[in-house]
Image (cartoon, rainbow, N blue to C red; front, top):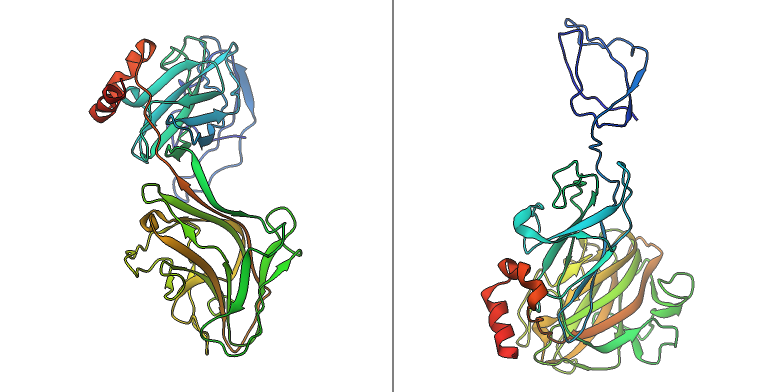
Length: 385
């Protein structure tokens, strides 16, 4: 593919000083009419090979995965696919880390360099702190300004992670073992006893079953909830994860998530507060409510909800403010008198508490990392000795 490298020019010649040595380049030129701004057809294509040092950075897709090890020792595990050198020879990698999401790689945030492997475990991280990483590839040509003296790519692909300790699973259900741990029931604003949440195999996130509520043209208030109450540890933050697929009438029919901490007497929207739990509009960390419901007679009218046509999406909810409580959860479907869609699917529900982990003390071969270690980290190490 061609790209513009210069212009408009008035001279009849040009020197491309950005060309890399040992590479074949092809060029064409277009003339521009000053009075109309219209370009001429492209000239014929001319090509030539350069001499001198190769300056092309490696081809690299950047950091691919960042995983919390969930170990007693705080660890974040990074991995990436191998880069391809365009100047011959081998490739190494440099890892940059910051606590700022919009950081740019520079010597001050260089964590390690000249790394031959395509993975790295960062053990100099503190519990609960969010870290941002960028990995860059560098060749061994000796022709560039990378930390190892080679040509380094300039990708800005950043991934974020926060280290925690071992998890406690309170709920982990993909519905392949049936519905015995769940209750489908009529909501508080619908008369009658007909329930519509059922196990379904037409759609699922994994492997073959999901709970499904059909989207009907009629007023409905329908609930699906685990039978269990989840006693969350007071000291450990909790996270709720689930997958959803929505094909409901946009803006009129949809689903909300509610919680109770008093045994199911009082229920509140997951973003609201009640019974000692503060309101938090940012409690849904990923794929939150996408619209406010309207409609004639919808029990959930005026509330934010998941509605419309959305593919399978993972929802992540921060339940840390509910730590120490006896938590109940329910998903609530509401529809109005008119219009209908296909329905709403729920799958792979997981509620976990995450314990703390401990920073690893610096040892002799890690002394170069001392400038990036906070005083609190050093104090934590001293306390462990």
